[in-house]
Length: 299
Figure: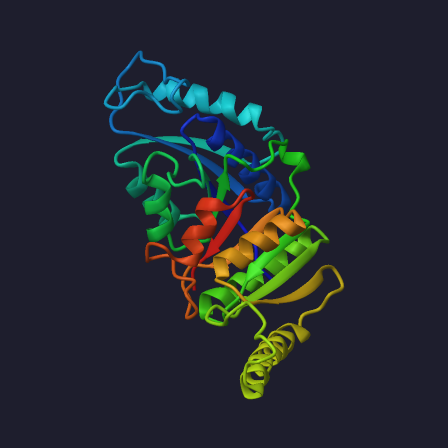
């Protein structure tokens, strides 16, 4: 059974990071986890209050540790953390390094916001979220600006999409998806994408063997997926099996839109292109374009 005991949520006082804090609060409540809220600045100085207008204090402008802590406590109250074991922490340094080091030291889940325009081509704090995703070893829940605004009590992962390619990270991601689905008594759609096959049916004039081989690949993919999931109990979680013929990220995003998914779960590395470390990867495409939270899991 998967459990979250320590959840880390970096915030920058932007609306997007406050939304991430709401999801972090919900996860902490479900699992009785310690919730730690982190804000990072280049340097501290007494008597200066952090600015909200740009999401973080002005670049290069020192801020007071006490002022930041006070602002963080107000953010906790706004996120509805009553009854949650939460603490705040403000540190100096380079944001992504401090976040990842803190996550390595204690966290088994890191929750962070993303933001951007037109497909989310930019991530929170420039490249901070992207660098965190590349280097953090614990699962990372990214929350986009397009995620529904709600209270922590209203957060529920009832409809989950999990991409699978049978790599170690994808199989581990499946464990997380099913656990979260059972926690919410929801439905997990497990999706396998045949990426390198023409999505269009062959025309009637195409050689019969080509059509037969194509159907053989589809049937084999369905059989393998069913065999993988057949051993999973469905008492507390409905499991749906989907084989798509498309690039994995396109299939995942389309399925998430069609089912109005509350969460997407993907492995960070995989044999079928689900590789976070390479620009243009399926996981990176999904993280940037998803309108619901995405949980990225490393092997």
